[in-house]
Image (tube, rainbow, N blue to C red):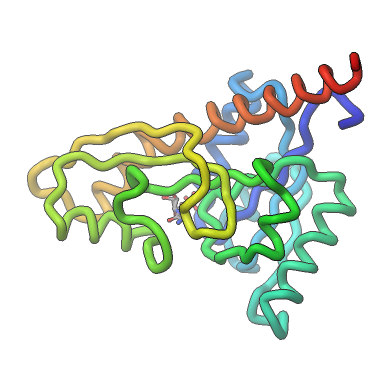
Length: 210
Ligand code: GAR
């Protein structure tokens, strides 16, 4: 790693409120060891792209639909990351599953935020509002968010941070989603990004001293 901050890419698909939390926490000094250099969306209409542009962050769109195969999609993403010297990838509401072809290239360098306490309500098919619908249907009284490293198993990588959120009587999936975002995701994702970035910087310093 050549400079003093870890170069971060954030992958998004939709509203981008987690991206916004990262941008805000970078400005307020919670994230100091890394810098968001690139925002990548699979969806050209994602509002997250507007948030990035407003914060003067470079953006790119790689549409899964326009790529013939998953391999082609992932190779395009890898080329973009290499062109931009990216060292850490943050999946913040990125609604595409990445195969081992991609994840094996970045061991402990991809992190994801998931809106439940893993191992509950996670894995293939559990994303966005569906996660909160499932938690309410099951009747759990506590849910939350998890930030974890990404490997080839959907939502199966090592856990970095978790935060619990209580379910209240009368919650709808939308109300619960907002509470989990405000009280858990927007707090632990920036903290985890700082923690992992700091770890990567410390590792480089140790390597340089050797
Ligand atoms: C967030 O709740 C995020 O945890 C979830 O989608 C939402 C995206 O919102 N991600 C997943 O479900 C991934 N499995 P955002 O675009 O406003 O950050």
